[in-house]
Image (cartoon, rainbow, N blue to C red; front, side, top):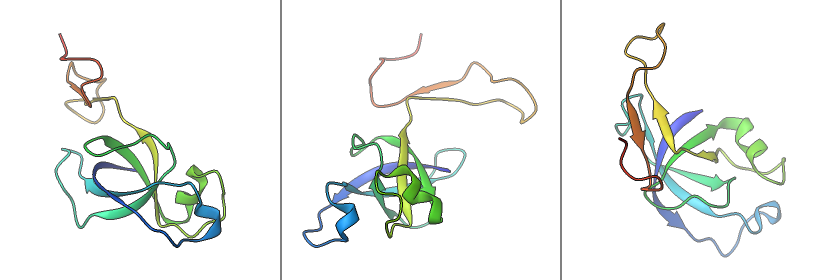
Length: 111
């Protein structure tokens, strides 16, 4: 799984039958510091709720289809989760530090 930021939507009037009702979103993949990494990808929205500006968890490869209602569909990327909070440890082997990012304005600013 990788971090991604939804940067747009895609509308397709003709598509594979197993993808009927699935939203397609344009996602910029991100590195561990949440900075853009590579080119944007088209991802099927397995949550049916993601939208522009949201931080999401993206699956790639064959496993991407597992996030969708129909499991055998031709997709390379799918959104498996909308991320609310990311806790980051200062060092990989230490418990999480008191660092929190609040996404989407759902919970307000951290205290």
